[in-house]
Length: 248
Image (tube, rainbow, N blue to C red; front, top):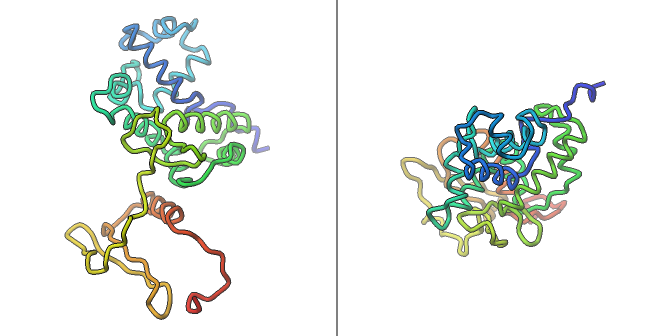
């Protein structure tokens, strides 16, 4: 019975990938349609009217990726940075911000840094997301669009795992993650708090030999806490063991 209430389309996440959204924004800019009425924009982009499903969903995607505004399809700063970058990192930065500017996308990326994503499992997750309330077929489309978008934006490494690119050209396929393991662990006395941060140590065993020390802000949001948890899960090598921590 619940399936009958689910939608076959959504405006909450894109149903066309970022490549299509960029192409639409480029056409709008090249044909000087940024301040035109939507019927004229649709015709200029090759569609019969603004209610045409392919056009409407492309427009919706471009807005979700923050490439064009509303109600007029004026190009945003992100779109201009991608189409006409004035610095070496502007193009990649625009792509990264467009992807991470969609909360659902950012949540999926942050929870899967260093991992591979299975399209079917992602579609299942999206279908079960009550905030989206979308049908199975819509979820499959949205999952495919997500994967296509992050690939276009340089979030997928050659081995298929996800990383958040940082200031590189999107044509490069070796995008590094934003976070990385330090080459040398700092000494305890090198880690000091300041006016905006604190230092905390967690001892993992009773002998106080195994520990984790962090320098962090005094407060974090719930979203930031989830990102920290996901980051730790990526950075630490998890060993399966039945030993008590004091026995290790």
